[in-house]
Image 1 (cartoon, helix red, strand yellow):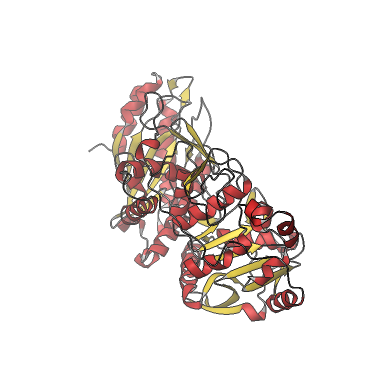
Image 2 (cartoon, helix red, strand yellow):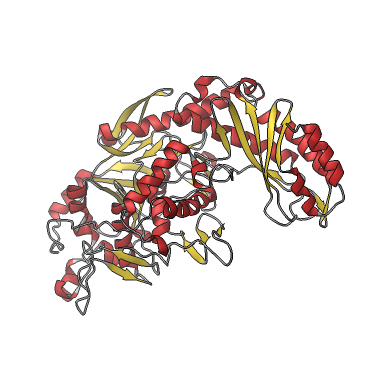
Length: 571
């Protein structure tokens, strides 16, 4: 078996040769205290960097078993180690030379604690996956610089980041316990009849639209305080008893003046499907795991979606029970987004009037008088939101500042006033009784049918040119699938580019493993998610090509990507 000394000899031998000589490094090397795997070597200094793994025996790493005794703790521990590895690689990375020369990095982490492929735990070892830009001058191997990077810097990073004795045990414990408390809080929602919980003292505002870190009190952040009528108490394994605002199942309006915190609360609820790092302010903002943010999405493609619950037959008698368009309007896209979410099992819909189509939300009495129903195919959400809850058990949280007609259908009305919530349900109902609307309900007593669709595998083609699979991720809002660009800018609950990478790989995996022209989209999604649960993220790419830049996603975001593929065909 090759050792670190063999690696040293290879690097000295290829020093000064053409860059492709680095291919001789591929393989496994035993270092004192860890094993180095060089899985993929870049062919050019400007190409994506080489992929490496380091594996430390758990006995040497010294992590107490209780730190990863359940799934919640294991994911949090892996997240913490990724952050430590990232911190130390930044100290040792030295970008000198051609292209990516000297780079040493691990997939970075943000405010959420995600299950990622960057660090793995097994019964006998802990493994970190990183990328390295092998040093070059022009296209010549800098063997001695690579020697320093791989045999001097890397062992120091491994020692500092993957050994329990060198970590801050209190910070690690707090990280793990914060995640476990959030999971415990989320698990209690259903038994309490809630779809979300926001702890007293939570800090909801972020620094900016491009900086997801919390706003500090000195910058104007107001700590959250639940109104007494909505205050509930949870018992958590580490924090003990905590209080905060519980949002009940049913229809909830968030109202208030502009700039008083309505959308900020909704955005916190969107991200409440994830656990957050200690100090984030949203550590105990938790939402039902099947909550889906819905918005209008002008221009998106829709493929044979039954939008008839919201949009009846179009002029000319065109049916909407299997509606397709290459360029959806705001109202049509929002209707399709809701039905697609229901198709994948959403239990909570989150909407903001600012990103919704007005004619999808409301049609008031005056407009009803001017345009008769037989000439208006759109049934507004106002007339469907109650039957959606009654027929499917799907709750809705809606930010609304412009239409009091929703008071008639709301179960709970929360007013945000100077960034603090107030329960104004009774007052809203009183107003609804005193100022009765003359509008007529539209759309009938029942919500309507959600029709399962069967995706056709031949419509998902990841190939490009001579490559069977060509995937490219730019950020959280777009990726390339074969020759097609998939726009995810309206899929607002994706928080990390590594989730998009995993989604792109999962589309290829779903086509190969589950799309057979008979399984429904939901059955395909369930198969993929089941495999991820039992075999981890490596199932997407195969054990022969381990990746450290994948992160878990939900079936809702995978479905959203498939639905936005412009070549998709369904039966």
